[in-house]
Length: 405
Image (cartoon, rainbow, N blue to C red; front, side, top):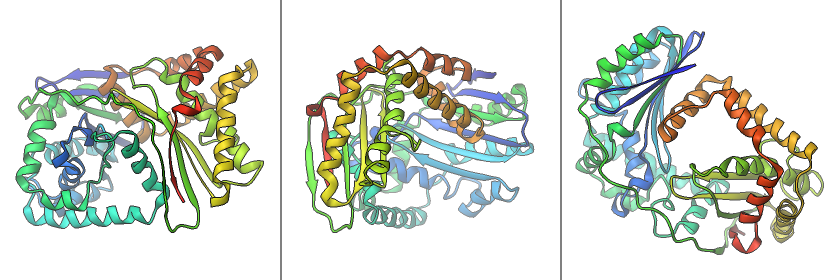
């Protein structure tokens, strides 16, 4: 069972005590690339990189060595709506991890020399995506369906925008967007909550409150876009997608179940069977549902030989039409539920995965369901709900498409 607390400066704490030699903890901030202005494109990701380049008392090498010297590790990532710094370590080093995460978040100095080096690193990362169309197409698709909005801009930024950033830009972004009431420190490990809370108060609690005083620009201009881009690649890549539910919409769970049924990780998914196993026209096909604060999108990606693209698209919409016109029978529905329940249960056994689920749930919803409660919610999904969601979302004329040929 998890325990929670709120520090005086608004930072929330959530911890689950488990019997393990390894501890995991992290600070999740409700700030991502959608919180950038147009002139700040890429600054959230650059800032995350720069957190490890030196603090008031540590140089970059000492930041990296602090956990690695005791066999642990520290890492970070940026998404459209969040920034996160995590650490994994032998549980005896809990205080070391908490102190270091606090140091990089609140005491980083952003040396000018390091900023210039890191810009080049990220520009190389941007260029590497150009050699991976299967990855780049997802960024390009969101740019297509969220035009002129921060949700559509890729996380890395552009070469031009990166070159313009100065130390003051990063400091201003942190001052405006790293708000303490939008932070959750999450932990899973073998430490009592009282002791953990003592460390959190000692380090995180020493920072002044910085409360959020702005609202995110909502995305409201749903459009249909169909774009074909000629690329010199052996294989064609395609995404078909439509707008979907926010992360607060009760219909999100039936859609997750549908996404898993259509083209989840299982080799027996409907689209994998239809395109790969039966016809051999696609090596990789996947369905994805990305909910955001005020919108969301559902998409299906596949790669195939160029001459098979239209055939594959027709097969995909044939499966989507089946979900709209034919209600799942009890056996099909039960199998779909068991599959996703199994995936959730297996994922919960991996503490590093559970850490992020714990922290993000508390950040977004202010509460965390137990595994038993989550399974109960999945079990409560009905065939009628799935039919309703399919008919709301899966009409062909509602889908946008992006094809690399």
